[in-house]
Structures are given as C-alpha cells and as structure tokens.
Length: 265
Image: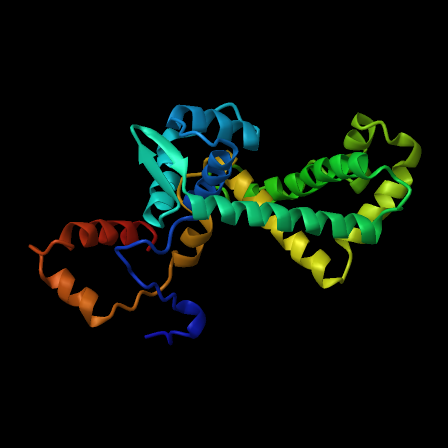
C-alpha cells in the first residue's frame, strides 16, 4: 500500500451546527447585512435581492443563496425576521458602523501616504474607490474564473495594463490633467510594504473575491471541493458509531455524505 503523507490527508471536523459555511453563503451573509444596514426599517427578501444585485453589479441573484446567507445571519443572532421582513439588530448595526469608520480611516491613510496633498480630497477619494474596484475587480474575476467549474480556464487572454484599468475612471472623474500622478500613486499603493497598506490590500482582495464568487453563481464551493477531491478521510469513533446506527437521526445526513464522497473519490 502506498504511504499516505500529510499532504494526502484532509481533516474535516464534521459539525451539524453553525460552523464551516461555504464561501458563497458567507459572502451573501455579508452583503445582506450591508444592505440591511442601509435600511432602518425591515425589508422583504425581494427588496433585499434587488439591492444585493445592484451592489455586485448583476441583473439578479438567487433567492435560495440569499436565504442561506440570511439563515446564517439569523443563526448567529445578527438579524431578525419580523412579519416576513428582515431587520438588522442593534449590536450588528454598531459592528458594521465600526467597520465603515475603520475603512474610511484606512482609505484616508492610503491617500495621505501615496497621493499629492494638493489634489481635492473628495474628488480623489471618489476616484480612488472606483479605481480600486476596477483594478481588483478585474483580477478577482480572473481568480474566480480559474476555479470555476462553469468556465474554461484561461491564461489572462484579455490582458490589461494598469493604465487600461485606471484610465476609464480617471476620465470619468475628469482628472486627465493629473493622470500620471494618480497612476504613480496607485502603483506605490499596491507595491507598498507598509503594514497598513498591506492590511487594506488584503481587505480589498477578499471583498472583491467574495463579490465575484457570488456573481459567478458557481454552485459548489470550488476551493473546498478541490481540497477534498482524491483525499483521504479519517473519521473518529463518534462518526463511525453513527454510520453503524442506520436508524439514528444522523443516518440520512451521513448517507448523503457517503454519496458526495463517492462523487469526489
């Protein structure tokens, strides 16, 4: 028998609770929470679906996936359903407010460190946010495409330079006169070794990747699936006892798990 190395083993802690949610569920939960933050009054799931779709720039989204995100938020006590309408609870609202304020400070720091002080601050900030969305949105789309089972893998067929990605937003905000200053500042930002810049870069990357993953509507969480395929499962005795007790309450779930494991070898 071929020796099993550590790289061959994937340990999975099977829980029938609130843990180990797919990336898309977590992404929908975050998007839903942000939408609910914008509304002080309870809103219906259809209204929320429209708002979330607008946030990520798609025509429509899956109500089923949105429900999974909402179920998770309700599970962890961040939202409540009131007469068929959802509302964000007080502490969760405060948490999002803190996140927003923190992000504002991070953006302010980036602009101060990498862009000329004589550029009008509000105009610079509006451009920067759009430039970040264009730049990281493009690469996040490539990342999602590379792991999506519904798209053919491609090696950056549609290559774009940093100028290609930034010039549309520069023109939109009528900043052509200082476009080289803006491009140089942006390059300084993405290549910075400053810890604060690195943290903000990671935040943007994760946010954009989640949004693209949602927009791609790729079904099974592709990262988890790739990790599990052709791997070795080691089950502890509690799981083994449950498998033996075919009439037990977990038997149906474990039978489904067995079928899923067969599919991914």
